[in-house]
Length: 367
Image 1 (cartoon, helix red, strand yellow):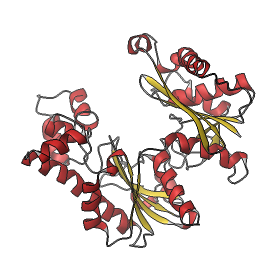
Image 2: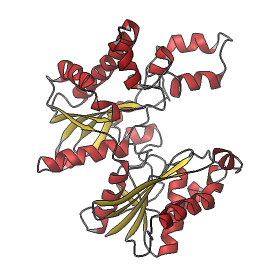
Image 3: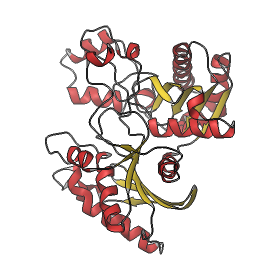
Image 4: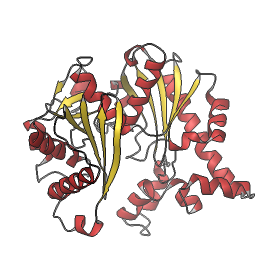
């Protein structure tokens, strides 16, 4: 089956064409940031993004004619269970609602639908970035009315869980796994029988520090900074999500550069890098406790998990929990195509998108 996958970035669009599970083409459409910025909203970029996709495919002599499905990474869905969903009018109405904030990923569903209509095939999305399967007890915080929500590397995390299950002749739904995605962002999650029942939230500043994210900071410290008059809200947001972590400490998020500095004797760089690894290990242990110690494997994924030093340190800290499996890299395009293929072949039931969200308030926790 011919499947076309797309993943919208801030100034680029990743695309890939598959025949069943085999990737026959992968590329990236680069867009002029100034041109994109000229549009009133992200949604208004749909035509220029579609034109860019067509140009790249034409250069490669490829066509979307005969596709069995177009599949996208799609944000803006609201909190859902993971899975493969049909892009329908209910979702499109939500994604195009001008009253809601738009993220680049929201455009994924709109573009997939556009292309699917042009080529006479269904449009899907897989494991939305807003997938939220947290167990009720994981949502409660120390403030009444403030609840934890899930924002993690769902698409890649669930993909590597399925890779692991397939390699061990079983199904993701039969396993308890702890997964640490270690890349530009870091997230650590507990997967129980096919559901992410607890996770750090990298968007909200939770969990270990990462190359460009601060991770957990003590609440009173943040309050002191917020009311000091020295920082604007935007500056603090950037320090949490864009310029924190390794970048804040060392002026770079490039782990290869940091390791070169360590090799030349930079003791502070070594301390900071070890601290990031320590924090990742600590959160892996926490997620092991969430699973009551019944952990089939700990999976390390993301680009930085290629670092043998990091892997060895995490094995020292967390090897008592379970075998540490390394599935390095990011597999979002493969995950999109695999999700589409599962529903096309009947291995998985397609879900119809509705706004019956997994979490709407305290009433959901008391059922």
